[in-house]
Amino acid sequence: MVGWSSNGRGTHLLLAMATCLDCDDGGALDLLQRRGRTLSEPTIPDLPADGGWNFDAYLTNTPRGIWTSFLAVVVEAIALSYITSAPVTADFPEKANATLNWTEGSWDRAFAFDMDPIIGGPIARVFVQNKSQRVVIAFKGGCGDPTLEQCKVDLCYADVHARSWGNVTDIAREIRAAQCSIYSSLLDFTTQADRFVRRVQKAFCGYHILLTGHSLGGMLAMAVAAQQPGILKAFTIGAEPFDYVLTHEMNFTEEQMSAVAKSNDIVLVCDPFDCGLQVAFSPTAYAGVKTCAYLDAPIPEECASFVRPFAATGWQQAAFSLESEYYQHGFNSSRFNETIACDTRAHEWLRYLDPVLKVSYPTCFVSDRDMQGMKVPES
Figure 1 (cartoon, rainbow, N blue to C red):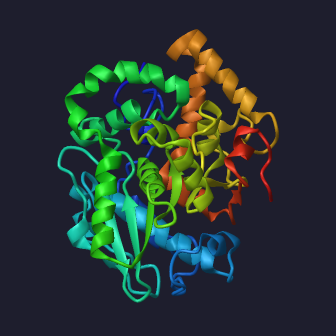
Figure 2 (tube, rainbow, N blue to C red):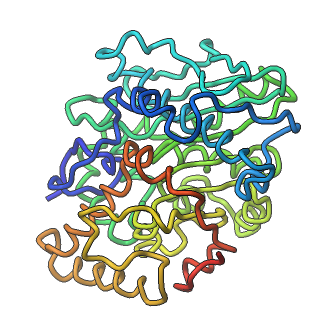
């Protein structure tokens, strides 16, 4: 059965049996602070004022320590997109005005650009560091409370537009269509997000802007950045696939898709089960994106019976067999249900905080062909 769900993968096709903590209850920032800020020493050095966002330097940790400094900014920005926006702020009002405080450098939250739609649409936070002329825009992931209209709109957007599970999503779209018809005027998430980013660009002319987010928020960050290759950069954690949005909602041509890939300005870091199962069901899920998986991340209990994605050739065929089983047996397919449960658990934001992002460095793929061709990526 498919229904409104309170779990994190609720931003697209989900079975009611799965559970997740994607819509943070306010514990993310507490977790980071309680564990010595998790990723490094209690005080993390500021990023050097190098005139922008240098993904190559961050991913190779050159100079030493820059990866931790960069990840600290991204992680806290995403965490704040969750805990400073409704419905979480109702329970944690003291955190409503929080801003970045991990690094030595001065980051200010641009409160005038808090994006908080009343009924539905993208939610975002903007952080500015004037000394290096850098801006971080963090888009919030999908809301997970099935009783709230905002969450229902999130689900409708992802199911009707994003098609995150490839062909399998078509069934969910058919089921969701009637429920989502009343929200049709609100489902232009990427258009809203793009207009918002352009407004920030105009206000901070000449600043180096980084888009980020987790889950649905990460997908929006990538989709918006793709519209301005060579100008905008996106670094996302556990983002939803964005290929269908680009080709069908935004009508990208092959030339535009090629420009995205050549820009090398969009990076996704992920748990291998999270992005791996997405790729298995939709081989072009992250086309044009530099994908970096934490291959040594602990395996979630729900994924124990699955071959670890990207670990060896042949893992993808097993996942494709699940798609066939799904079509033969529908939502009663126990193995497919197990797949959803695995991916849901691997996708959780709090799980990324602990333990996934604590596992050294991710392994990056040379190109999305490595993922589609079922090859083991470069070390």
